[in-house]
Amino acid sequence: MGDERVKEEALRMLGVFQVLPRLVVFDLDYTLWPFYCECRSKREMPRLYPDAKGILYALKDKGIDVAIASRSPTADIAKTFLEKLDIKSMFVAQEIFSSWTHKTEHFQRIHRRTGVPFKSMVFFDDEDRNIEAVSNMGVTSIHVERGVNLEALRLGLKTFAQNSLPPGTNITK
Ligand SMILES: [Mg+2]
Picture 1 (cartoon, protein in one colour):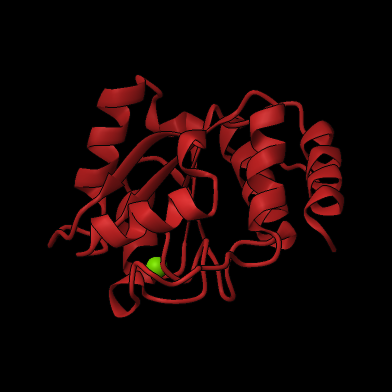
Picture 2 (cartoon, helix red, strand yellow):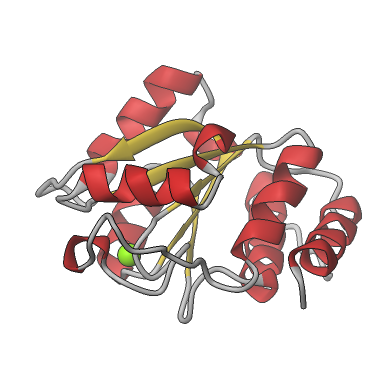
């Protein structure tokens, strides 16, 4: 699927849910792109996972902000790659720094910068320890296996909607 097809499908999914997150936060390495950027050179031309760009565009179209939470030790390479991919200006917050905490500090900063409560955020990451730590803060956190894709988006939206309901209620979508 090309970016446009993915965007259309993502927008269709976003239309299905009555309750949507205000902010969607993405990890970088093995979530938005299939490599560790610390192992790459700034001179290279990076590529994203196939569904990533379409999903970002759909979220923006729907008025949902996007942000980055990455523990990469090479923020300079990460930011160069985001510029080369022409998506850097899309993110309302870009927290890229190595840290011993599993991104709780990243999310504190994102919250301070955006004012969005943790319970109104969805987070995608490929590492279980980050998912666990951030989930404990009240953020709907989704583990991705092979990068963010439409299936992960659907799971994120569904889980978010479920988490937003009073305890004990069930939805099927
Ligand atoms: Mg990662």
